[in-house]
Image 1 (cartoon, rainbow, N blue to C red):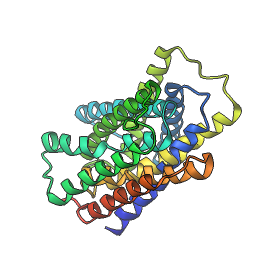
Image 2: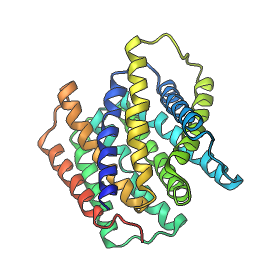
Image 3: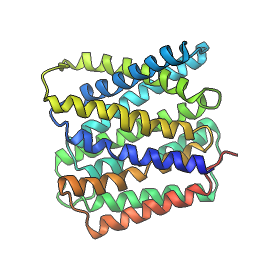
Length: 292
């Protein structure tokens, strides 16, 4: 299980950088940023498959349809979540999108028939409690003087959480019989196609943004996407879906710290309490991370 813990740690560090890179690319619409992120990452993977493996992944019809569904969920997740950062703070956005374990827990129980024992249920509720504490002190959903802009950002973040839950469930199914590189190549490619369709429908252009924004979008594709998400996808073969989803709750912690360092977004005492609760839920869930 050491390799699983290592992969989850690497994933947390890498995805924690995502919100920072998105914040630095504020001039690019979320749907366009999503398209760049997914197209770049999928092209790099397709290039690797062609030059290194000399072949593309071979799937049956059922796996292709399932991978397409996963790509749709992933594309929707990024569009919702990236947009949320433009309307609310980084701590609120990354924390609300990290509530995916509650949706994964419900969906995996009813769809995948995964049993959820007391430890997993406890860690889920702890993660939710930590998320509520962290968000309530940030001016999001639970702030006394809530405004419509913050509310919109919070709603988009929750929709991102629901979407990524579907993505995790699809990954849990496909990763049981698929190599990690084959899996991400197929799913990321489908996600890129969907994101391009959404971008074209939106009417936004693909050019005309700051030069630095293109650099940040490239880094977004390589670090959080290829390194971060791939680490989580690799772990899905060896750990329960809910446990991997809970591990992603480390992102609010890392992102909040980075937001404070780079953007001076302060961390209050209550936010610190929320961070501790979230870290505790990850620690508890790690004892139950291995698949039955």
